[in-house]
Image 1 (cartoon, rainbow, N blue to C red):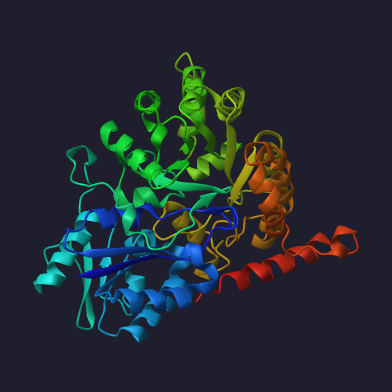
Image 2 (image 1 turned 90 degrees about the vertical axis):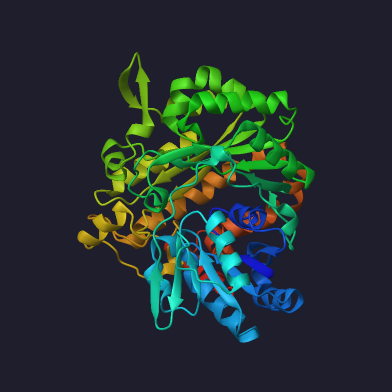
Length: 495
């Protein structure tokens, strides 16, 4: 059968396509795990934000798919509905499958959308079995992890247990299935590689635990190194390790760094997400090893620098430094120091806007980011389906915005007990623009051609809403902020 897999074009504010166009690794993993007789095409629509309708129309006509799959996050749901409508208009009899975080955590929302199947949680084996069933015309009632339309009703089969990656049940991704090009990170071709899945912490904002439970499974190093090599052979010069929590097992992560060096793959550059506690408690040996293995940027899950907010986020345990077996306070500063001493850059992940946040507590986190992180990735608490945070915000009546397309992490959709949502977002927006400017000299040194030729576009994106009048101080920042929000709303109209 011909199969077309689509990821949505909606992008995060912190990952503007002018600088970052990351592939959807889940779709290439699906493509690598179907039976060999199927012809699978993967299209990341982030690469064609201004031509979504034209691109989908062309691909449907050229590929003539019998099955179309969509990977959807919550803030992309509205776009997904529009793409489903377009696909139905172009090819009424096609089977449409949805999967990803949003369908997995809010399957009831898709019962009113014109799709046929819903793949919950990990999809490789479920999707493989679904294609077999569609091809053979057999029933789907025994496929775990699948929901399907049965007349006017929906049937939700039992969950599929998380895959144990050690048993080689999940085959390598198929990058040759991609039919669009242009994946870049600061001008360098980028790809994603997965070395493990899962996490055992229970942060209140996290969808991963709600989707697959608290567990941690790993691929063999042979599999990981082969995957990195394949990404390199497809042109990648930067690798983003997309693990949910790669530093959960520090000894394994250190051994992976050694394996990357031994395999000669340390000449690539790596971007990774890490816990502050792991790097603070092991940074003396881990950070130099990471740098030798080629790691350049580390997304550090600082979450918040205040104890009360960390407790609300349930992120205290993963942000605590330990000395002689005893807790000794927030690990963020020590982790950042280890990374900086070893010439790595910190993408600072913080969350502001918790229920008890005041002007002073938000400013304390923003000041920390100004002083210590190289690139800010500051978000607002967002009530994603089924997370503990969502229940708490709704119980307290703090959710102010039900427009899911604005649930992108940088639009404040909940208020605190002391500040309206718009004020929280304004404080972040005002501070964060200038933090990004401070990183330009570093980016210029690291990627001079990209900054010289594309840096102006990054600045234009960062300062959307500004004008000559605002630059001269002739209008308020609140006025600029209002224009920025209007521009951001218009940008969401992809289809």
